[in-house]
Image (cartoon, rainbow over all chains, first blue to last red; front, side):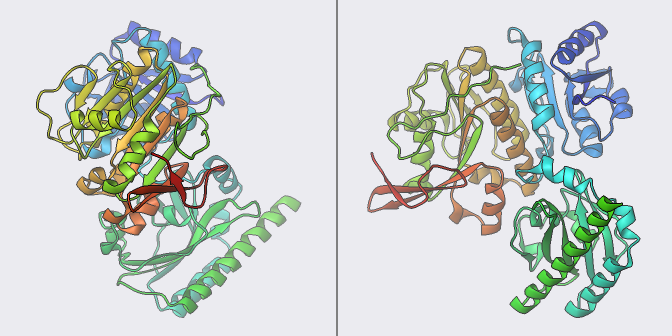
Length: 291
Length: 219
């Protein structure tokens, strides 16, 4: 399997598409060609790093491509590569922010290759903040097998203890991978995953301070997140967990269906629960390394 | 591949050390008494191959360019370009100015910005300073702050990969503290600005070799 960043190139005209694909490949990208929104949708998966698309396609336009990409791979970079001037393009929705490279400038394909190669390797169009050391962090998370961890009773016991100790609806331990939070243990609900742009833990892993949201409806970061309403998360407290190198791999959290405050004593207790989870994870890693 | 530059961006007349290419800075403080001026001064370039792309959200393009010139910017339409989203523009000059009807149209702003960036680049001005002055209307007009997050990832991503410099101004008093803190996550460093009896002070967090205590700014 190639280590090169993967790019989907969507242009309707076969010869133009082949020329674009050649230039992208010369820039070190693994290119897959598609000619329509339909074929792009079929080819899309989470391994795609970047999508380069014409605006006019036989079965839709560039914004249809953006919608298709966001539904499968929300952080993937999309680049509009078109002869249309920006002012000639219809206006997209606020969630359709994209990169744009005009085809009418000289050597536009080479410029596109430059922008795409850099973007595919280094840029995200995620709708959330990403830690500065994301690459190292993701490598650290990949060291853990969530399914294996989920089978361990210790995490279930801890989260069960947390729900009764704090008198809350749900307590969980989650690991944050590239696209979603995956729950190792979850007491009070049967959540398996939550997309990163919906998860409050996306913010928790950014700081070593305890994250408290007393009322999601009153916090502008979360007031419009439908997934939190569907999961009945009205209040939240979470502490990030790190590996021994300091990479934030996930969080230990409390949620409730009602607005709620946490005393300093409760937050100290939450920190102790998180320390315990961190220790358990370190122990599992050590056992894995020794095996 | 694009040419990688090691030349750091410098700030004439400001008590700041040069910063490495690809850096994005959040300038915070009261917009009317210091932060806006600081943002514009950080965007002034004396580089022969330096260009500036301004996203004007709180004033129209003409006023923004006048302010830029007053704070030391050189108005050369080939190298200074504006995306006007302040809804006030009447006769808009030339190719160097694009309009977007509302600060809520983040997709439109992003595309116009990339278009102007590419025009600047194609004219040979490859050390591009980007200014968003200010972020406040983008946040206020967006129903869901996650759209602004995506916009910021896209813009700072381009600045980072193109070895540019990004300067975004935000008045922290206009937003909830949590929003200011989360927006700050998208930047490499933060320049706090305050005005004390007409004189400006600044301090920097998040970057090495910069003044971390309040430091007077010369005029």
